[in-house]
Image (cartoon, rainbow, N blue to C red):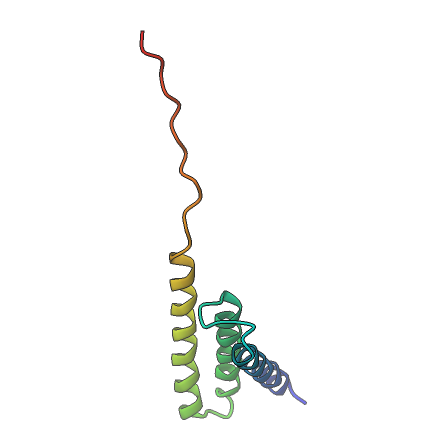
Amino acid sequence: MTFSYEIGIAAGICFVVGFGLLNFGVLTSKSPMYQTLNFLGAVGFTYTAISPFNPGLFITEVVWAIVALYGLWKIWAKRPDPAPEVPAQQEMS
């Protein structure tokens, strides 16, 4: 097996584990783990589509990775900010 095959197997595992956990109700589509598994799977399959070049798979996986990154960004952007620092009040004389 070449390194490309190993990456393809790992990418497939990421997709199947993420999809399975989603369908069994362990993860939701808003879960960082689900989006990370999708991103890693897409990046892995994108790599395997390079040699020999498979344009259909390459384009699909690049778009998939971008969508997964967008999902991760939405999750992290909506996280509540930590408690803001309250400036110390100055005593009034």
